[in-house]
Length: 264
Image (cartoon, rainbow, N blue to C red; front, side):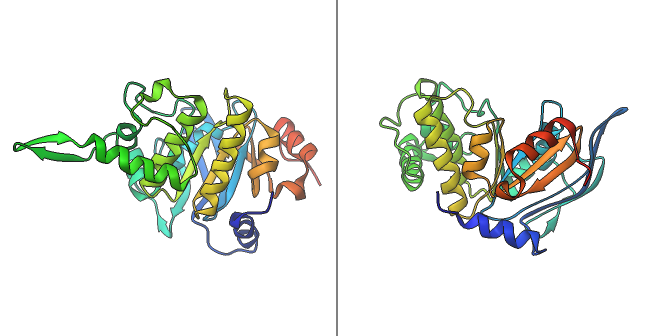
């Protein structure tokens, strides 16, 4: 697969140019437990960074800090050249950080358009009364899905009746519509078929081509080598390894996931 624009972004970040997201010395404590230990991480616009680590390595805590669900205990975070001091999920979404968790946060009884505008519905007035404009929301949803080259035949169907890959596409399209600058994807290819697995990887590539930064959490190493520009490995709350996939090699990545930072 040809390298997408994020590959160049990754190279530039390693030479010290500015990042869309920059974490410095991020720590997070829960009582006596130190879940994150001085984590540094940069992510550039249009770059796909695979965040790897075994269970309990700190990945979920780190993305919750980035997404505003946890305030860090120490360290600093800048996004789009602004230092963040307010850690709140709504604020994170407002500034362009979207997180797509495994449960996708979709209302399965609602159609695609209604999910795209969930909490931000388009309304119109009929006979002086405010009413949901479902047709307009479906129309807007169809346009962004077309831009992402995603095909869902019937946008009136409840998303609970869609396939796993189609639901992932709806969640991604929602992030794109609301002009996300960074999308965090938590195990997006888990529990989908082979064909949909490939479609989701292509969707990640299209996000990067649009200049959207992506943090990808996955346990599927083949996916990392397909779409990631850079890998960051966490072990026991600390960053153990970072670099481009081809520079590191799969064996070094797996060793760092299991055993942490390796001595030179």
